[in-house]
Amino acid sequence: MEEQGDYSVALNGSQSNKENIYLFNGYNWLMPLPTRIRIMEQLRKHQVATASDLGRALGMTRANIRHHLIILETNDFVEVIARRHMGRGRPELVYALSRRTLGDGLDSLAAALLMVWLGPASGQETDDRLRALAGQLGSKFLGEEDAALPKRLSALIDHLNQLHYQARWEAGAQGARLIFGHCPFSAIIADHPELCRMDAFMLEQNTGRRVRQVDHLVPASTGLPQCVFIIS
Image (cartoon, rainbow, N blue to C red; front, side, top):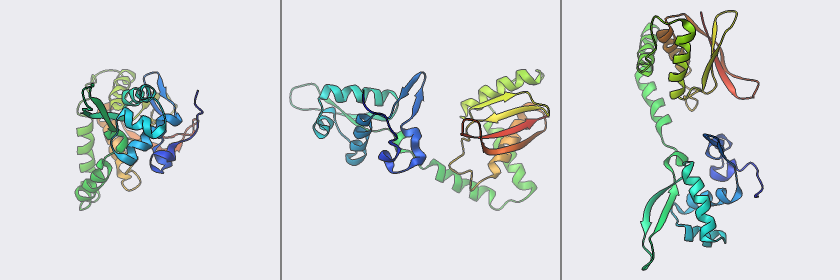
């Protein structure tokens, strides 16, 4: 078995992208194996490669490389972009880093759009625009309006988790505590903290209750940051 370790810097020199290595997919952890990291380093350097190309570069058999490529492709780290014909044999698959691994500019675009849209607004107008955004994000929530709060919260949690909040709720002395284990806007939240108000508005709209945020990206017992809202 290959030695495990922290290879987060190997991909792009940034500790902030460990999710590019540690991916939980169902019950299958893709462990940070050196061979797979070396394959991804080769693809980052050369952009594209076949199993034969990678085998020559890494001194491994084509079959061994294909085994690792299948795992990387299954977990959406690499993708097949073409087929290369080499003589009379079967064409070889050409691999590249997946769009998920390479990332995109959506965080920069979102930040720019918020700056343009919210920049001229102030006070009540800003809140009105944030409520409109909250309504759009929560528009697909189909909870029963007359349902008891616990049942409505359970349905709302399912909707929030489709939006990548990793949400859960628990009873509390002051009211229901709704906990976000992940901020979907973490890439831009430092520059746009008003998105926390948007989250609160979305919770109010979908519970019909008063909502206030009591924790903002505070480390939980796991060490991961979380946000907490009280629904009263």
